Image (cartoon, rainbow, N blue to C red; front, top):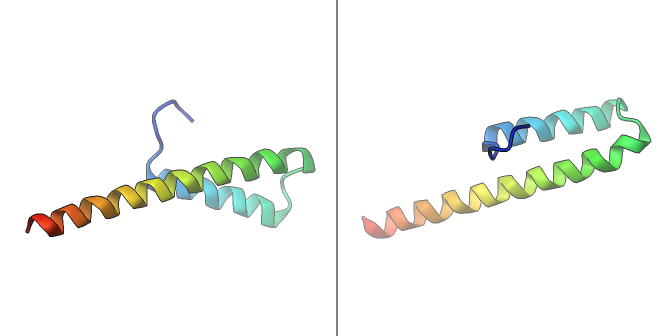
Length: 64
């Protein structure tokens, strides 16, 4: 992927693709650890984005 940060939607789609590969057994043993590490990184990105959005919503509620 490019150097720009992925959107939440892109990250979730990539996680789902990795999960599908793991479930279908299409990843060889050597690729599994890299794929799992990538999925963990993507999930951390998603959590960060969700947390940031939650904080923005809280600010908007307070400003009302």
